[in-house]
Length: 219
Image (cartoon, rainbow, N blue to C red; front, side, top):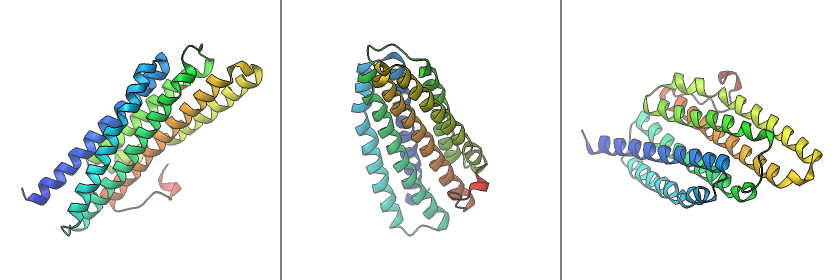
């Protein structure tokens, strides 16, 4: 194996490590929401620096590899890896945003719409996991199957916002927790968006086709 091949493998390993941290951050943020766990929410926020550092490391590795004049596929791989790391860093940001809302929920009783949050999170986390699996497994077909799930997450988010708005209208005393849940729902919707972005990059990497703005190819 050449030095270039070893560094490409290291780049992929760094992406996998970052993806694992991002997925864990969202899962922990969800558990903090469900359990109203302020300490766990604090941990999510503190651990975000790991994702920031991994993004910087991946960018440094990628820039070094670009200077080695890679062939066309490797060039796509390097640039896609940088874009994936950017999306994973933003997933971590959304997990932090969720964690910040725990103080507005702690000590407050649940509202009926709370049950939609775990449903959204399960979909978004699965999309994120599968998009990385598609990258590692060189599987653009899997990436294409992930993309339509974003519409399902969007639909749950819209319905949740409608329900929470109704709760606020019926009982203004619920406004703080309802606004917090709206923000958490929006963060999960954005996690799904970032998973979709990664899936689209995987299609571009392995098929050479940019489908980011081609709606009829997204299902």
